[in-house]
Image (cartoon, each protein chain N blue to C red):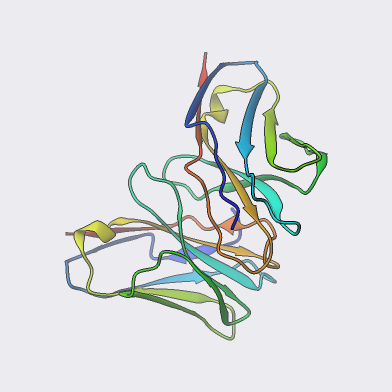
Length: 109
Length: 112
């Protein structure tokens, strides 16, 4: 079971690019990496998922190096509404799912 | 709106009681997951079902049980409730195991 490690918190100014890195040293061959965003008292919301290299969608990019032992979520030009907790999840198919403690991102005006 | 529904939204009950939380997954999703989130804590995975079968278990207490019915909705039963069971309980669903999960709005349980 892949365990994930993320920074507990990060601060960023509005308009900056934010990169949040997640370590997952014992990722398995069939595991995917998924990132979620959670606002207080709401269910987490899917942001992006990838297996290797780089994935980009309308809200974020996900960078995964060749060894896949870490991944970086990149949020371009953050705004105050991006203040939330960001979770990295590594899972694949039939296995226990583990969310880490998440990274609390505070965007400062 | 994720398409996952949970009822009730809020539940207040006393210690020792039993409650049932209900979850309807998104249309077409076969996998259902249950999570517990206590105040200012991360998400604790409880249990996962796929097409009616239990597939993975997390740190779910013996006082808790769940099932997924033929129509794919799921129920989480919590019994002999304790004060420490007060939390947000989320249900999520995905098309297949390992796919991105879509979370419901949660049920806030308060045990007094």
